[in-house]
Length: 506
Image (tube, rainbow, N blue to C red; front, side, top):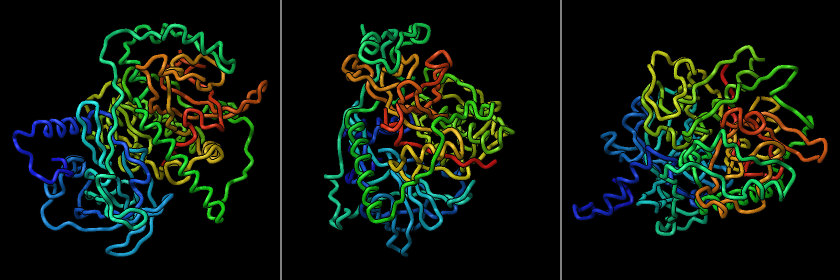
């Protein structure tokens, strides 16, 4: 039952029951539609926690996000109060005083580190059709574990916000919001670019060239093309991201003025690529995700494989399984544990997962381009992540300089981008988002959350334009043999804000 309801649900309350059922479906079958923002999180929260004496199998089978804690365990629960202040400080104020850190995980949830533990939960929400109500004053059931690799000590928790950042009592009705989900087409009509779309792009600028790609898109339905591009983002979520980034930049300027943040002035090469480093490539081959929304799995494994190669000087070239990230958790069937399979996920949570159960090999679990069934647990041959996180320590702290330093030192980097229909038609050159609103030309394709891997950077010899070079998961027939160059230093398509790094255990 949804915990924001304070009365029992009568048999005649059909609309409420339907809302809850739709929310349950949303939890396991799609990128969570909840939308909460940073000001919703900062303030004081009270958490109720089960004992921390369970293993990961208990958590994945019993500790479901919609399940109340008293249905998971019997007996008393522990209580903890934590105050979150920007940009990333978590202070426990009861039962004891401790200081740690936290981060938002996009607009869906948050994670914090305290007392040698890490805690993760998504915000609560309900859904009726395309209308989503987000309850940003409380969480769904979350998980906590000792802050170590392959933790053996797990528990479940829930949180409720009790005070705002200024100390005033939280008013729950002010912490709720509603938005409409973009609707994916269910039509089986084949994808066709809008009339004159490619010509308009090529006429209005000369930095990059667009083309039709009949060999890639003409046999793909509109719904399949939408899945390939990524999870559609409503206008509310796009604007929320912009507000978040503005707020993080304000925090960083304040920290710089107070001497708490010192920018790096490290000098790096003007051009650098892991595709050709001392006559070797440290980047795995381009692959295709098909019509499954699994870009997060390819982005996460692509970055991890590249980093294993860099850390071992190319001695280990293990191929990790995107399908395992989508279908399994610790060799067991995954029902929304850190990802929504063919319906989306985040590299940050894939790093969290890989620190606990590792990346499995492609040999054990070949890619199927569908949700799939979990492979035999006896085939699980994990490679673990030692450390993971957002560059700079929290969502929104990344910068161009931090990205270049991390890529140079550790290898290819997974990033979230807001991709539009222009990406479908990129052929070659340095991509800059079209000057016109592509969704106004074709409303079926709004901005999406898409994940790619940055493998290089450089500057164009003719124009001096700075660029990133990224590997996509649309096959080698797309773009520059599966790669794209995109403008660097301008946060083009938000490429410089949601960057996730892994330190591999090899």
